[in-house]
Image (cartoon, one colour):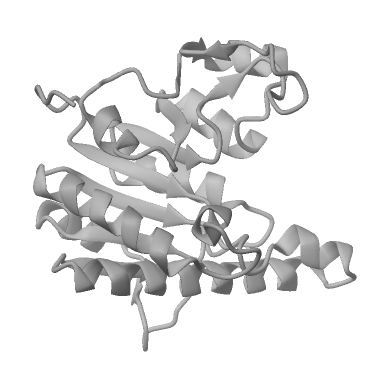
Length: 240
């Protein structure tokens, strides 16, 4: 991979909880987490200011809890705590690689994470620390996709990287239709017109209204994060 000039200096990376499953059916695959940590170490060495919002679907999802009969608000709080478990695991693995990391939480759990305060979060980024943001927005009924978009805007990030299990946005589900076309670039309006399931509507509308581009790419392909930072053609770019 040839390295030219960085295209983005401050980025928010959205990691789904499911991504941490690796080869497992439940919980955290620490070998996969180690692989991701090495990539993030390379990214940090470039001088990129990196914030990470992490999901909790590998442990618990509020929507699933509601289907089992739990109160939706309480189920969502349980999901937020699952994101905190993932955040602490990621912090530990990154620190073992010698990186300076801070975890901030939208829920108050001061024994294990700092409370999220925007000014302090910006300061951590300016000091070169990797910032992990846990517990979503701290409110039920909002997804971690919405939290990622909100935090990216609050922190002045230039782009939101949505790292998933697929390599971009397709016109149809590629698992159901192998002939489905993948978009290299697409506008927010076109995504809405085609009703493509990129992220939940609240997150997507927020990004569109505030002109925050979103890059959707495959987390499992080595060096995709780094390639994206240098502006290489990775995944699908969504913009106004």
